[in-house]
Amino acid sequence: MLRWAVIFLIIAIVAAIFGFGGIAAGAVGIAKILFFIFLVLFLISLISGLIRR
Image (cartoon, rainbow, N blue to C red; front, side, top):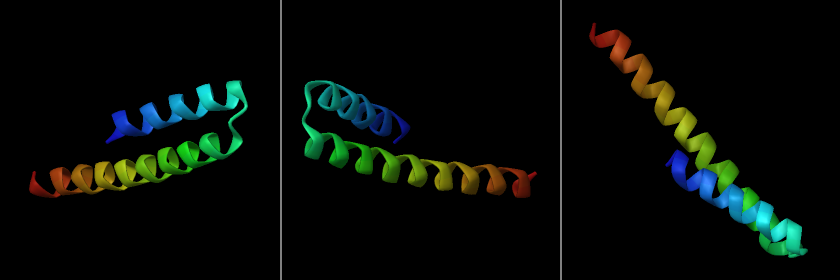
């Protein structure tokens, strides 16, 4: 999932360079959402791994 967030971030940067504001804003929004979902899932797996020990 982190991979998808990075891909959408790169798409947003390329779109911003070429001046496509709407596409860049949409890609940044998707990248942020995917990054935060990844972060939450990572923390849950980290905590569950510590509890199992």
